[in-house]
Image (tube, rainbow, N blue to C red):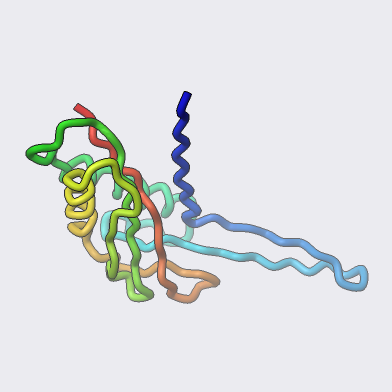
Length: 141
């Protein structure tokens, strides 16, 4: 029996706290990352979790509204597309990293290339930074 495991990890906007000891003195280090902010999510300013949720919902809504069944595509499946934002919030790369069909991959890439640029870039430690994520796009009739 062949099993297929698909794992998409979205580490969007997570806050981690590392606690260590140095000569009996606690040292707290907070690593804070935020996702790029689309205009639709611009009203959310300080809550990284709410920004992440809005980001994910915006991406999924965009895919659902824009995705079309490619002519000639005969079977259902899933395409994994990587999207890269630069440190200014502009989309610089969209490519299929795994696909079951070339027609499906081309359509998924087309849809994600049509995303608007972010109005604010992703941040790491409050500094603008590039941001990359992989999104699964399902084709099912």
